Length: 382
Ligand SMILES: [Fe+2]
Image 1: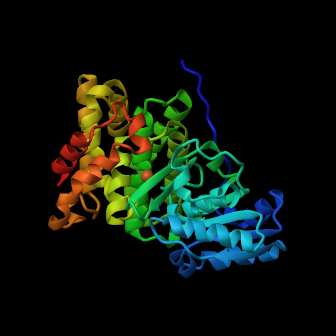
Image 2: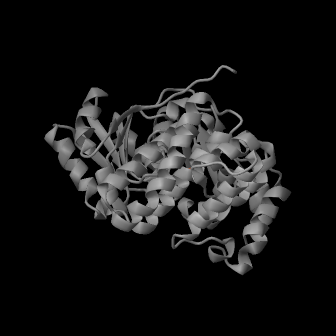
Image 3: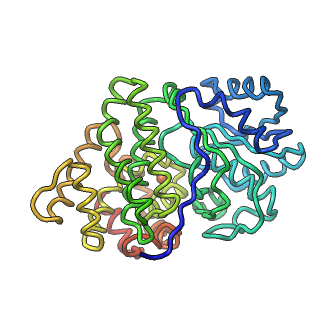
């Protein structure tokens, strides 16, 4: 086996773990916290709740609300300016991937300077970042665990993947109680994003035994509990989705992702669509594309998805993909690209696919896809 490494943050998991946010910040030496979140989390009452917790622990904070979905380069750069102006020393983000990725981008610029695009790609951040406590409000993005940060370069209309060990936050807080205020759509989209993380990490060229076990556990839990979580909104099932997402995040943070996320980033950057919308559309098509290059591992995924094997490994792999397609079809989500992209915009697919080739996630796909192959996948799912 090749030399491997496995990096994760300290994880505080469980119902009510949000209450530990202040103590976490104090342990990291906080005197003034930069708080990052977005309007949706504010409206759900979680930002106020967090402010109250910090106040109770005697922690001073300033609030940076400049977060949108698909966070932009200038928002991150303005946030870093805000961090420096207010003399903050610890960053706490509460939200989904957008809030947490904004916080990570702010941390990079606050300590390393320059523009966020200077850090696109793998291992380009040299100086240590300010301490970070990330509190996830979804069971999906995994930004609270991962060494990934996805920021849109507005000028090029592309999502940049910034990947470096120093982006693993000091502390991740995963409180499943927060999922209770999420819409059904968001729960489904987040869970399918986590499923895509688990599957792509499992067949990644840099997967290890430590990431593989997390991937398989996540796949099993999502298949088993997502329908019940959506139907009943019971805490027991939502908690299982939080466990699944955390496991999937440990896997993909260390094994990276694949062609599906490369294409998802490129489409999402161009059309400013929500990241979670795209996976039920793309995931199984990319799995079919990868099948012959990772057959044994795809069969293992099939075995977990089906909870049994059928015939040969290839047959098990294919039956698993079929099962995933009917799983996605059981939810009220778009399954074709034409449902989320207008016919008139179809002409942009070629430049989007050319861009996807260069995404860092494509490098660890069982075989990197060419732009023509990406375009073929887009046509298949149109
Ligand atoms: Fe993702």
